[in-house]
Length: 354
Image (cartoon, rainbow, N blue to C red):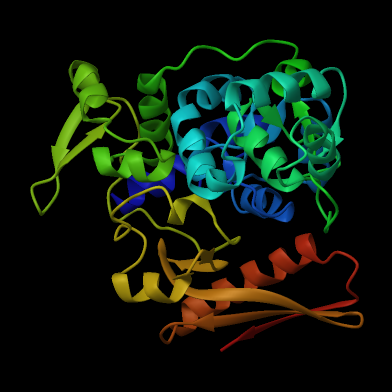
């Protein structure tokens, strides 16, 4: 299961493919911060350059939007058209949870209608849209109105949002059909299941639900059963997969890889033991945070961060257990490559392996 998932996530080797192809193969990348997808692609795509992804954002071939688990993701325009309508119940649920009380008395259908008219043909930041919505509902918080609209209406966050190196600033919004030039498709949970299995399989129904935020997918998976391969794990749980998807054996080597915070590899399964133990998970996934991680032999072995001291960039790696000499050399080499990508302006790069 570990090697199968690493193969789908392009982590057994770097692949000589276009970044757009990689984003599609990965079923998107978590984009809580602008740099995360860039670092995720660097770990997976041969000779990846940051400007390649920036160009895709400006060309509207990939978009940043609130999607799986109601968090920011970078997906292809094609995947957005499938994912956004299907994930609508997830986003409506978080609106009720986070802003239900603060929008009490607001007709949410009218909120979407008014907000759509205000946003049609232009881009507004969330505060700008909130102030305009508050003209219709002056007794409600502008922020709660704008956030609710973001969850309830198909919107994307166009550049410069999501571009490498962007820090702070208000998130711009545009209507998805304006930005992409086409309306979103109808909801299709089966396609979401297939996308998950292609990128993260083999997987249980609970794994698909954990990744997407959707509920009650058992019937959807059952409707696909004749098209899927079915396995059982050591606990007897059913695992589903696409019949022709790669499932390499456990003897296939997995090189060291540095993954960014919130990488989907760590968040795509209910049972995450294929990449980390419970003890490691408790150290990586703390509260709402997910640390930047080091993979050694395909499993999480530590965390990392880059510190700048003038012209020197230091990659500080904190292993959870001792790493052998041969692996230390490979980790150090990969770390120096990471610094060359993430801190190209540094005069000196160092790897400090605790």
